[in-house]
Image (cartoon, rainbow, N blue to C red; front, side):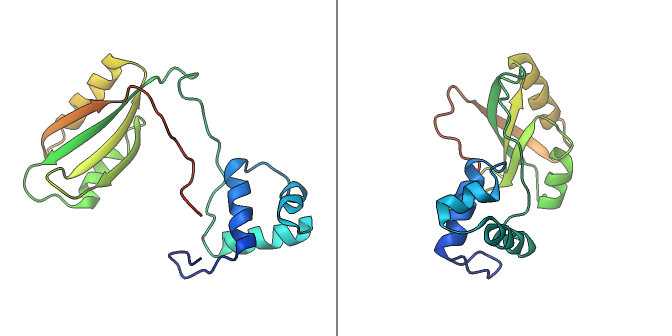
Length: 155
């Protein structure tokens, strides 16, 4: 399989990435037992995957509800006039409530995934988004149940 940067992943690399996606804290020896390699061989492959940019970070997956951030929504942003992606990014990046923001096709210009403590907090975030100078209007959809969440996409 080719990574966007032109890196070719063989079946062992793919298996290593899948194992790290399940638990990035697993030891190289544990991963090696799954992929039939020694711990040093797994480490060399992980180092190569990091150097090539296939793996760029090891992260912690939080239980946001346990931390009191129980409300989620997708906010569709409709821009007034022509607004560059850089302007949109600069506006929403400082918001700690923004999980992700993407320019999209169709009549919506920007799709913002927001996490808040409660509905009132979400309302304040949407009000702040609406106050951005390039925003004509927003439309929000509140998440009822997150049915599938993956830390990574397909390998």
